Length: 219
Image 1 (cartoon, rainbow, N blue to C red):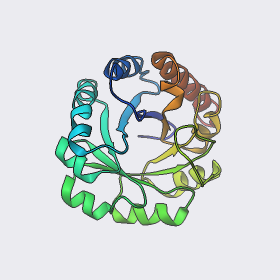
Image 2 (cartoon, rainbow, N blue to C red; image 1 turned 90 degrees about the horizontal axis):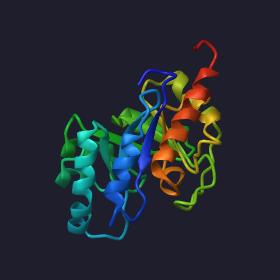
Image 3 (cartoon, helix red, strand yellow; image 1 turned 45 degrees about the vertical axis):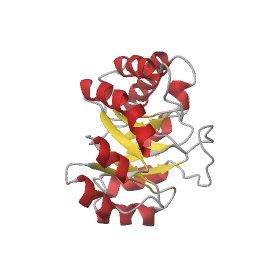
Image 4 (cartoon, rainbow, N blue to C red; image 1 turned 30 degrees about the vertical axis):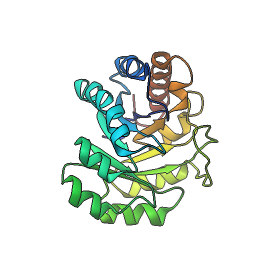
């Protein structure tokens, strides 16, 4: 994605049962071409692979129909089983090399790098397709220990072509500095699923577009 464009990387809540497929449809159908929902991360915990696969399949189909990348969190095995578009790896979830070997050259492989330039450069050298920095703000979704500043995004964007994802407590109200620093994607969960999901997506897109307009040299 060409800078200064910034897209939404939507992360699922932990509970994706019940009416969640309908909520996902509403969220993705509210996507704005100016700041679209480009990816959806399937993130569940403490669940066996068979149950996770059953929950994932309708969500994966919804994403495919809308050309939204379907990314599996943590599990290379589940990503392979589903034929997902990619996998997101935490620091303890396996290597980029293993994911690439098992998922193929076209898989999108992302790596959590917290607030570390060193981890990000290592991930890039290993062949990651994107790196994720955060948490930039307090998060209600998960406990966070690392708190980078937006200038980390600016440094990365200036030196490397690999896209960067900003994550952690991001909302329509606070995302502006991250967009202006060079985030290619904003990873969000509670900002969308915490209330009306369609309105949440629209507000984020509006905030991203407004922030991008303030970047010097852009219209």
